[in-house]
Length: 118
Image (cartoon, rainbow, N blue to C red):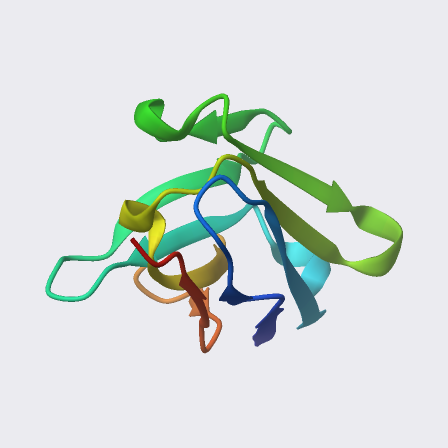
């Protein structure tokens, strides 16, 4: 079992920055990949960024350059630095982690709201 807890969401002006945090606990050594997803109102949940099992980072192409995923292995945390925020970045941001088989070992946090008003 893995528990993921996000924090750092809030209201930010267009053009502003925000840092989200995700703290992992439980069977952390089993985690292959860990990253961020988001779900805007009325839309499906979408991939944002992640660390893969070989340590590489992947980004949604449209967010590359504005968003940066970082991690602190000593604290079992990952972060999402978001710059130049836009109203279309408004969403609930979720932390996700797990390992194969993913249909069995797929863990999500409760989400943190990010709001960028027009």
